[in-house]
Image (cartoon, rainbow over all chains, first blue to last red; front, top):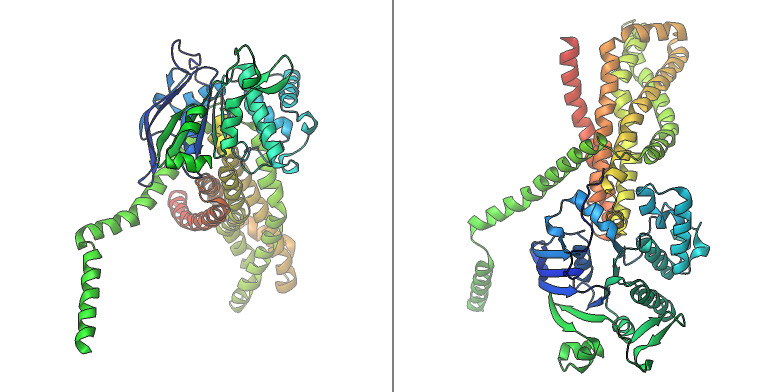
Length: 276
Length: 284
């Protein structure tokens, strides 16, 4: 039986808060003294080289890993204090898109997307409606009966996004969602993330080593009226803004934290190298 | 020239000595390295077995997954169990017949073969075959799921991997292995009976009478308790090595090999102790 846990947002708390979080494996520090906050509806892009600890940070934020020290507070609840059985229930409020999709090989696309609904014993008719709705959002309804092995890398990521969205979680984590994809497919994925942020108000962390992803999220918004992505500077009345921050990780610590505009202005040699 | 060689040797020795840690910490480090990992592994394995036991006894149970695993392990393994059991029975008669003929007691063949098969060979051979086929399969399947982050995805979706992956495999193996052992015993005796007929001219009725009369309740109990314990060993070791897989596809290979090696050795060792224990209690 799932343990009832208060999954509601604690008023006045940011949705995601890391307080002096450190973690290491085999006596090697992977993340050291990491502190940051993400407010409701915001997206924070975590930039870093391969192996810099981006995935570990996301897994900490989902309670899949426990830090050696520090606090990981999600929606006002400290994950470090929770037992695994409480975490399992709490994670139903969090969507996680894994690097390669992490779809279950033995299940069809429909069964992958409806996995969480089956666990919640939702009736069959509602399952089908919600699965089709979720797949339609990522434009993958045609793959309903297919198996993951029949899908391309980009399609797997989109199905993975559909699976993460099935319960409409207020928080979604994306682990390198565009890694290894061609520019067109990468853009499709970023557009989906923008739609989720601007239409559904989803708060998210996005780990990537591609600067284009950070700038894509910072410089564009999804305009529901015309149903397309528009650059923020095209808006004349200035009511639009992209609620996006950037966090650069280097040598297990936060090297830069701020807006993309600050990143662009920086004279720091490492950041300039990153921007080159 | 000789002086240069001596100086060079002295310099090398000095460098080596300066890099060498003192003997105390070095010994401690070696002991630490040698013992820490195995003890840690044993602790993690014990925790997994305990956790599995708790979750077997509490809802929710995934009945569909248990049935699927019973099909994979039970029905899938039936051909190899039938084939191996039949020939093991035949081979036993071939090897024992000559000895019994020397003493003019060929009729004892059925008795000996039945006792050996039901008490010892049936459970052990069936369990070793299931270790090779399904222990490895469990380790590689779960290992692949770990390295492709499917296990993490499961946890992220709010599902307990021990309940969803480990419990069905353990329960399915525990249900199916005693049945497969029974089948192995039966076809082994059929094989032995056929070989006895052609090699020793012992009729099937005589052979089966001898066999059945020789078996006591204790032998049947022993033949059923062993596969129960072996099933727990095979499935939990397979799951343990699968779930702790690290290092991509190479890691999956290592996990599979480790599961088969550890499973096979554990079965042989457990067989000795269970046999000893059951003989003591059943005979006394």
